[in-house]
Amino acid sequence: MNITNAQQAVDDWIKAHGVRYFNELTNMAQLTEEVGEVARIIARRYGEQSEKESDKSKDLGEELADVLFVVLCLANQTGINLQQSFEKKLEIKTQRDHDRHQNNQKLK
Picture (tube, rainbow, N blue to C red):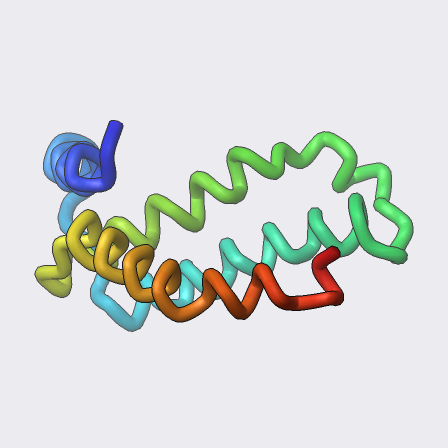
């Protein structure tokens, strides 16, 4: 599934199962909450904090999918073609960062 299809799938889901999109501010708050859940898993599972027993069953993939879902909602409701935007950003990063990363001694 490409990003365009993902945006359409989210829109179809909203129309079939939701009443409407939450407003942009609510979705921004939801995005922040979901990113926080991802951060908690990463910090405890891969960082130096110990993982609580209640966090061990958390699925990182599911939490990342929650982030993606809200990002797709925000793109849909603000009229952003995320496929185009992502392709453009990848091109910019490729041109801007290739030599910088290749020459970064910290990455060797």
